[in-house]
Image (cartoon, rainbow, N blue to C red; front, top):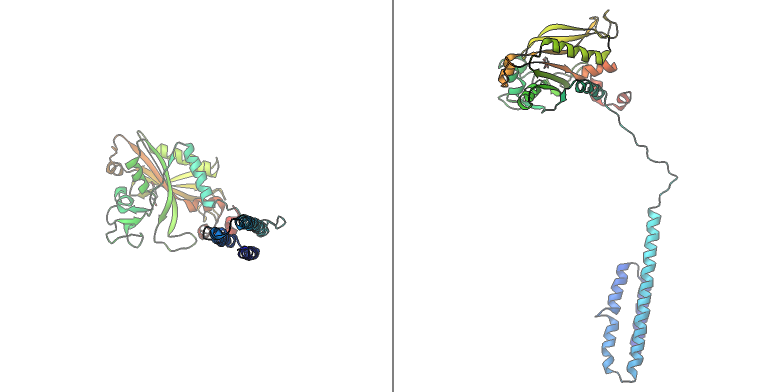
Length: 341
Ligand code: DAH
């Protein structure tokens, strides 16, 4: 039995010496010291020993167990230390390597222009609202007085989703007037910026997707004088206090009377130059008094309430504001262009 025990000790210590991982050490612990382990198997035979031998062998078995446990503990501490060492080496940070450069983006010139506009209108008590780009033709056309057969409803101009031309990509932000009338309590003062879509070929002044800003006021006793006063103030806030404006008669189905607002060319002061294409004036927006029939269709009594509305292209406004001469630059998102603003 003595030999058995010293063989176990020698084999176990050699195996512990060779072990490469904590798992292997665990396996050895079970193999030698576990309930079904080699040492236990020897101890089970103690009954066969004489009373004199028993304490001697017992003592020896305890020694073997103690030295094995000590060897296992030392080995596992050594392995843990090595693992930590390895981790520290692998995760070491070289503080002398230069940091990675973080490039910070900037606001797009069109959104800079939009934020300025929002500031102006919010300052005058308007609410900014948002609505869907996929719109019902009923709101984009019918309830804006553009009935069946109106040229703007043509398939060659409008992106429809269905054969019966009921669902479309909105071709203007004007349906936001209807959505506001349907959902907001009176009086209403709102602007609604957003994307609109038309079947236009891309060139320096056209894109099938562009942005408009719609605006609307409905209250009791609102007149064309309010329209002119407000829009003149906006033009002056945008282009300077001495900006001259001019209102020209125009036609839109949902306003009556309708007009277009021009600002005197800020470049040449009205004499005519390349910026205003020799006109002396630059077209800013379309506007008008909301047609009584449009109010009626939204359940608003035109005998009690009146209102005005306007709509304009945001790209053109930004291009004028930042002297950008090609619309495509706005959408290309070339950082060399965007970094200038
Ligand atoms: N929706 C018109 C367009 O896309 C612009 C417009 C004109 C909007 C007059 C208005 C308005 O609200 O009153 O051409």
